[in-house]
Length: 83
Length: 255
Image (cartoon, rainbow over all chains, first blue to last red; front, side, top):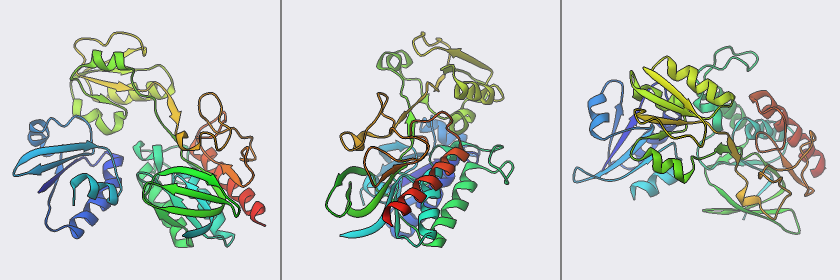
């Protein structure tokens, strides 16, 4: 299981989500978390057709299984990822 | 059962200010927040009308106020309030995960953007629809976009996007979307988040909680603060002002 977190430094909701992502990463070492700055890695953002941020994408065996746009608290993030 | 003197629905500027006032008066305080503290202001990069902190970002201001509230002893849980019921001792507050009781309840759940109509969503097709230009504007550098809406917030979005995009169209909420616009930014007003209060307190026809400047509602022991209240000016300072008034009246009610 992998979680992609598309963000940008100028995006307020992304900054608010950051500590939640870090908490999630600590609590769930079984999930690989990758934070992607869309300004620096615009090719990845384009590949995943990210049109709104913060954008969270869950991958299973490298394939996208779901995505959600917007900030959410830890409990909802865990439910969303399914851990 | 988790008992508090004061429960506050929403941890935006109004809710957090109410928490500061109530906890400083020696009350036990819980804020229930559905998503993240701060509310609408976290989308703003540089605030110029909050006294004493020129250019502060909404995120930094939010973090400072939340740190202040929790340092003073207020608690916060990230759960959505689904129902409030009057009982013998006060109020039963239900969330998606839990139940709490309190003797005074403060509504500070704010507003959300009014969504684009189904018809316009169809017109948008596969093109992205955003409700936050400062969040998503930079994804459309040098591209053509359209802003739907004509109010103050629409003007603000247009000004911001003009610095990034090659062309910014502006249309009404029932106009056709220009064919060459690659993204649609929506600013057609906001709606109060009060579904969980229907039948509990008096709401106006739009769903705002009816109250005067005293922040009292139709139910004794229930107060309202911030954008969710019927009022003229919805600003950071008026949200904070409401928070202080609602909390002060809640403290007086608790005796």
